[in-house]
Amino acid sequence: MSFDETIIHCSAPALCGIKPASLFSMNSECYDTGRGKLSEWRGVFAKSGRYLVPLRKSDAMVLFFVFDKILLDGVLGDARTESYLKEKGYPVGRGSGAVLAELLHRLAFQESFPHEVGVFLGYPLGDVIAFERGEKNCKLAGLWKVYGGEKEAKRKMALYKSCTEFCAELIRSGVSVPASVQKFTGTQGK
Image (tube, rainbow, N blue to C red; front, side, top):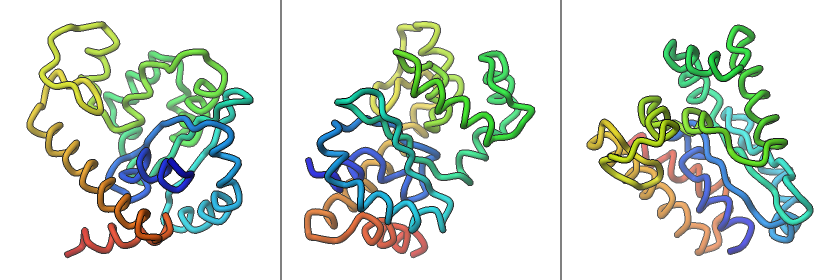
């Protein structure tokens, strides 16, 4: 996949403001082809509170954390989520920026992904905790393992999929990433 296709395939729902965040990796060669675009896009997306944060994991791999600040602040402001993250050593008393900075540090420097990343990605806290505990009886396995709220999870997964497909089709027809996101968000008001 091209740089543009990878960004849309892996993060369209976060860029379109319907998911708090997305996390994915890209090989460095692909990343290098899109660095100029990324600089331009970051300015465009920042105007709507959406951010693309590349974290170099190795010479061969770049990890991306893409997020919608308003949606992520909502997730991080939930009392149960705050309590959970505090138990994990996050500085919840210092605000969502400090909590996000701690996650990005962990993503950049830990070998494996911390389980709590699921709450940042918008997965229900109960599902994140059940997965972390190694529970076996999930009701659905899709973008995440669902242990409760199957109907709502299916609805969200379908929305994320339709968003990604909508934007990907535009990318294939030559529309830019920012323009494809703008077209999707324009259809949501109708």
